[in-house]
Length: 280
Image 1 (cartoon, rainbow, N blue to C red):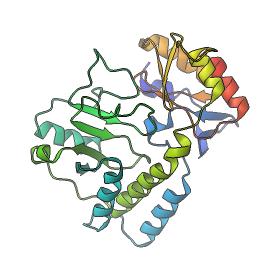
Image 2: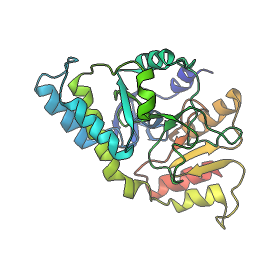
Image 3: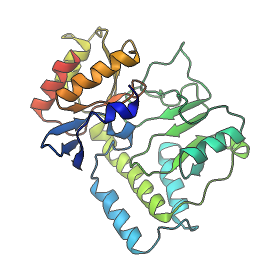
Image 4: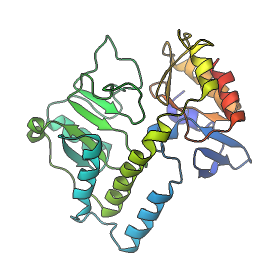
């Protein structure tokens, strides 16, 4: 089954609040996909929604040059000091920039993900970057170019690199101040959320993943920060079975085995126990 086929197994969603989805038939699902990390702050982050409303009320929806470009770069520098950035409207524009610099990646090609174990002990020239990972340096190991997974589905696509590499890439796009403002707000909200979100223990989840002693992980799952990946990786048919099993229990996993499960920022004791049972 394709990713779209799997997502179609989810009943129509009428509303999304924080990390829960409410469907047409009255069911509630805990979102473990979080749109691949783009909803990592939840589906209704209040600061971001307020920023969108304020910027839209100023009529700043068209792609005009705007001081918000510099503010977004300043926010990115909080996570990536001494780096330079290229900012593109969407994936298509980002992949054109990669092609212009000699990279053969095209949309749909897998990009090394720090939530997963590196293949053959190496990363590569390009890697995703994810917040709330608990291993220092794991986001940037072996990679000279990073593509951050930023909160909010419409965030622009960003390349992070050393200054010496920047001339190889196409210039940044001119992006709507509405998009830039929301992306900037999301980055600052990530910074504010890092101490609490990154330190959540979820003891029942840990017991399911690591076993009672917390020393030797069992074979099924690997946890790194708030991310869970299946060990070993599953083929398409096996992952489709796992997807259905999670969905039946009230959890939305990623529609692809190439994406990690993401532990939510809010989960009740009952939900945690239920998820732990699934994992074990």
